[in-house]
Image (cartoon, rainbow, N blue to C red; front, side, top):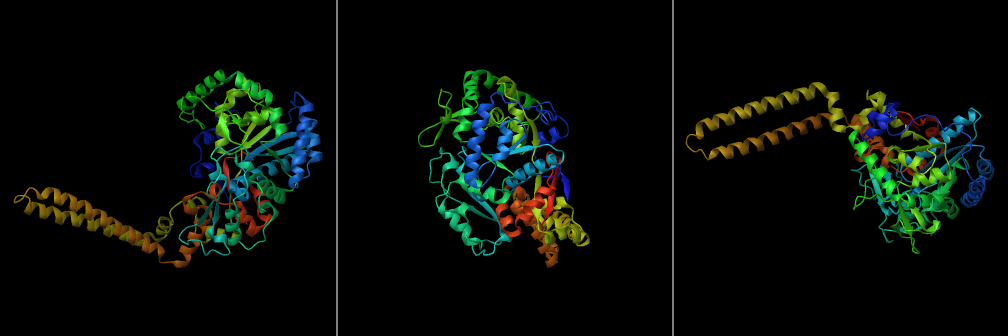
Length: 504
């Protein structure tokens, strides 16, 4: 089942217009495909390839031959990335990875060799984001702790580290691991072993799923930082011009009815670089510092990636596409090649048995984003119409009686006017609520249908959130295995104006 992204709740309006052909702020040309190598220093690329290969080997990914080809400039480079969330993060993380693999396989059929990099955003310091896991209640084997009135069980670790500490090097909270293991019946895997960091846990899980189909790149890899030193120097030297360019682009976006993805901090300046201290804390700074001590912001991370790895194609989510629209003037300013930017595939996952509810009860796919009671009430049109007619008839009769009371009483006591007005408001409110409860009661009378529709909505729109934004893909993989991953890879559509409901 494929639907237009315009039906996907909360989709970024800029991205919808961009997909429809508006290229004022970001081109959509396929300029990167089959491009000649752009590396200015193949020796630097070779050193970086050796470092990436060694780190990936430690995670169980054998990528030596692929990286040797990339170092010689013989492949098309495609990249995506994400924060190193606990147990792999939300479903959209899997969708990004699946999009890369799908691109790699499709281009291989055309005889094009692809190097697919997945960037691990280990330098971020949003602990709350990486240490939160939302588990779909329907997948829990032992759900004693789960409140069945909700669709998601949220697991979250309390931050014990400094708010400025980069999360990639922090150890997984043991309480979070223990809670996860208590809910699912599986042996503790090595990627959840005691003391393992968020970075290594995420990487080893990915390696167990994708093998060597993806090459992981640690944002804090020292060789990567050293390769980025010339860019850091240019950013510091051109900081005033960069600030002007970003403010100009912000005004252009606002004039077009959009909003910038990253706003200027207090003082009306955008954060460009951070300095990392000996404790792993990041502080905004434009002072000269060693490359290993320099960290990028949300705005300059794509520039580091594009400068050092020189991707032909970048695959990102809606927010990341909007980042590129905001920073695209900086690529020319800093002499950094702008890759072809593509939107990740959007995929939701539903068990085949649950998906039968669509056909059985004549539901459209977009119906899952609606209120269950309202949706079911439409299937009882005659009863609902009768209730609504009675409510309106009763309301009119009530107002008529109150009006007559006023005609009799007001001449004797004008102070009753306020009391009558307040009474009308209260009575109308409670009468309307009675009608709403009656409609919901009609909707609930078919228990089997209600359970089936509720289960479908809980799967694809749990607690009012689109599934891929919040639900842990690990929980789905644990139940449906690698077949689910392969199904997502097969059905996901890279850079397309659709989202797919994948049946497993």
